[in-house]
Image (cartoon, rainbow, N blue to C red; front, side, top):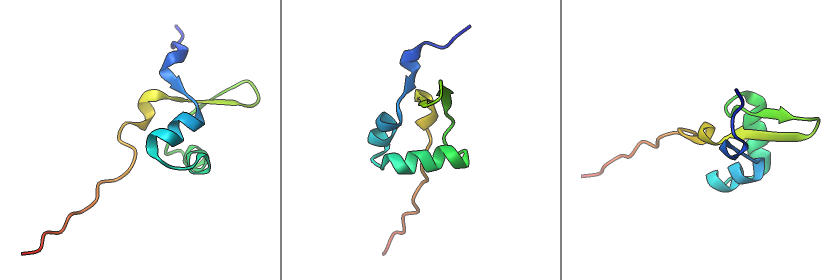
Length: 64
């Protein structure tokens, strides 16, 4: 069973969604933080749901 192509996004779309550069997305793919599939020799696609939970929570300190 194959996954519909609409559930995959481009590197540029991922970068836009996370407000980072395409270079950052490529680094995260290389280090395994973001999973990706290579289609052919040059096309890379990222599962759309792979961006869920990317990033980290920031600690908020409260001053009295």
